[in-house]
Amino acid sequence: MPRVAAAGKPTAKISKSQNTKARVLHEALALASRIGFQGLSFGTLAAHARLSKSGLFAHFHSKEDLQIRTLELASAMFVERVLKPAVAAPRGVPRIRRLFDGWMAWIRSDSVPSGDILISCAFEFDDAPPGPMRDAVVRGHHALQSTIERLARQALEAGQLAPRTDPAQFAFEFLGIVHAHHHLRRLLGTDPRARRARLAFERLLRDHAAQPHRRRAAR
Amino acid sequence: MPRVAAAGKPTAKISKSQNTKARVLHEALALASRIGFQGLSFGTLAAHARLSKSGLFAHFHSKEDLQIRTLELASAMFVERVLKPAVAAPRGVPRIRRLFDGWMAWIRSDSVPSGDILISCAFEFDDAPPGPMRDAVVRGHHALQSTIERLARQALEAGQLAPRTDPAQFAFEFLGIVHAHHHLRRLLGTDPRARRARLAFERLLRDHAAQPHRRRAAR
DNA sequence: GCATCGTACGACCGACCGTGCTTTTTCTCA
DNA sequence: TGAGAAAAAGCACGGTCGGTCGTACGATGC
Figure (cartoon, rainbow over the protein chains, first blue to last red):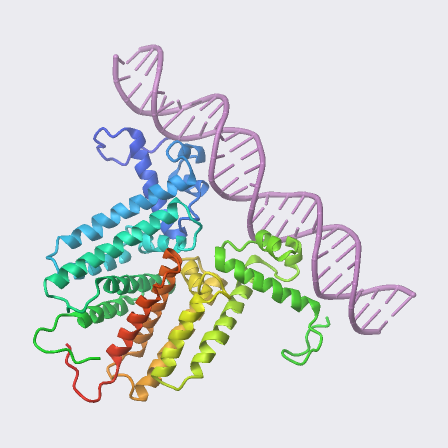
């Protein structure tokens, strides 16, 4: 069978192994985002990556290894495409906004089909028996939660959020909105339901906004 | 066929079949709530229900049939234990509160282990290929969404919510809070994290509360 | 008293699973 | 260019999956 020559890229001296490994991992990511991490089997991945099942074993020692590497790739992409652009925005509320916008775009993006694979993964393993994957998912959640908390705290210190704001609570609700949007998008299709999430986010921000000019009326 | 003449009649004799079927279904529900609907296999269920695999086939024609029956049982229990008690409360905000309280208790309940199986199911099938289970999940979502919308609309008409309230948006955020709580509970254990969901719910209510005494300050 | 039907059983099927072991192909570099 | 290393394939294993088949037991209707 005539092998397909590498996809035209110069590949500056990356040993071929690394190259195919990366390619296979991207295939695995696309596959996992469609059928879940549990459904990511060596057989289907092999067929999809035009590699024999045993050929995969040269790169991944076990299915669990494959899952974790794939999850790591997804995390790295999320950091690169969502977190980094967010922290490029000015501290405080603008940065929080940028995070939300970037996240929504990431969910909408086609590069990782079927939405945010990290969220799917979290829900897939939230009731799994203890194991490396579950641990990785828990670590990922804590990282996200504390990141959002930090952004909220910065906004608080900058006087852009009301002093009564609880950063942890803010992060909880922030994550809840994103998760709800992701779920609905997958369940009901791609209709412009992002509006609901956007409104909820605006309400969250408005409700915690600093109001220097007058005393708060509610309560 | 000595089939049941009519549903629900005295039927002093609950034909043995119905009995074991109900027993097996409850086993299936408990099992599915621990390992998910996809993981609910005939083999494991047979071992768990002390019935041979082929014995199960006398009651369920296929795995899909088993899944759907199990889902129906869960839905019926949810209606019985959460929805009905809620509509027993006075119309308006009290009824909404009762729904939230009941739902949180249902998630906490041990009767259906591992939280709300309907929520888990929804997340399990939100990216599944089209099929009866997915359809059932979508229908279930619409039913819940429209129920909450209705409660919100009633509260609106009773003047207990601010006129600018959008019932659909209210339902979206309500569901988001419950889902987020359920997810966190499964992911991080049973710690008293319900407080976060409670606070978010209170904020949702407070934010949409009618304020007859003064004009709203925000915006 | 006998035929019928629903319930339950054990054996079995083909497909796919994850994973090793061996062989062949391909790449790398002196 | 050729030898050694690395990558990929081939193959076989034990296991589980959803599902079928033939069969046997117990109740029920005629």
